[in-house]
Length: 336
Ligand SMILES: NC(=O)c1ccc[n+]([C@@H]2O[C@H](COP(=O)([O-])OP(=O)(O)OC[C@H]3O[C@@H](n4cnc5c(N)ncnc54)[C@H](OP(=O)(O)O)[C@@H]3O)[C@@H](O)[C@H]2O)c1
Image (cartoon, rainbow, N blue to C red; front, side, top):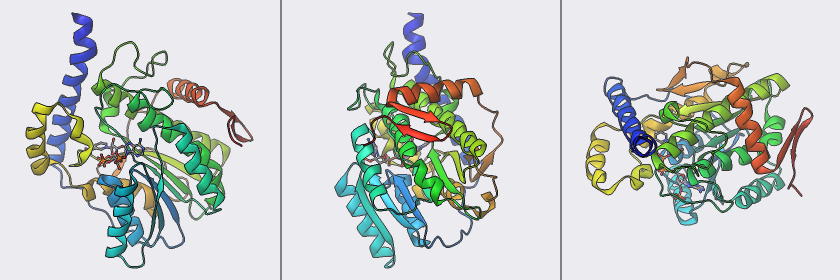
């Protein structure tokens, strides 16, 4: 009885209480607005899941500033539609859509390979795509969906693009990796012996675990880049509670109240995008001051994450993905 409560009901209660707290904070804080950002002409950015929601607003804003933006997404129609709308709004926009399914490691590899064949620089990588509260299921490679899509797919994508990010960074403009996480990370837990939630599945818990994994990855990657002296930073961002389709898998009886509350109290996708854009574009972060955890438009002084847990998760993830790391660079066991 207690174990059923602990594994199924407790994560639900914890997530909704956290949501309530975040909403109250949002209610008493003005929505974060994007400070004026410099032009981004000549910069190349990849935004995963940029066809709608927060990602779409990130792409739209970057394109307006002159960046060449590539949307990596699974739904071609949605992606092409997003490209069309942005190009209608800004005639000069340089935006394109490329197929990327983060639930398939083969698709991630294919996306990275095609991008690298074009020999473009890569200045900004926004790991934004995500799923929440999806029913129990597996990715193509057998990973639990939240863990596989939100975390592991992005880990591999970042890994495969890391040398391009390193080569594209300069002392005046370091390359930036922005991992769109969530405040839900703080109630997540990393069980290294059960990353796929096989022992007991709760969609609520699985989402929180995947968001914690993203934060730990982001922090460890940033340290790796700093220690190696590479011109690349990595940060994690909480966009706040934002009115998007992310909530569509919520329990049906809660959908109607959620829709009403979202209309009244959630941030708009553009407001949610503002913290992501600050972390990706702010000139104040040059000179080695990148990294960290961002929320409400600014970097937060969060308690540092357990370095041993970061390292263990990093190593297990490399094993799961068949990757090797050496001090001279990365090695992908499956790269051709
Ligand atoms: N909304 C919030 O309140 C909130 C709060 C905290 C954090 N976040 C985070 O913000 C990020 C963006 O979410 P959102 O609110 O903008 O939700 P959204 O509107 O549902 O957007 C999610 C995007 O991710 C894409 N995606 C999902 N699975 C994918 C896959 N396997 N491969 C490639 N793309 C995939 C979706 O495309 P498809 O059409 O293919 O599904 C969609 O474009 C997520 O990481 C989320 O966890 C959101």
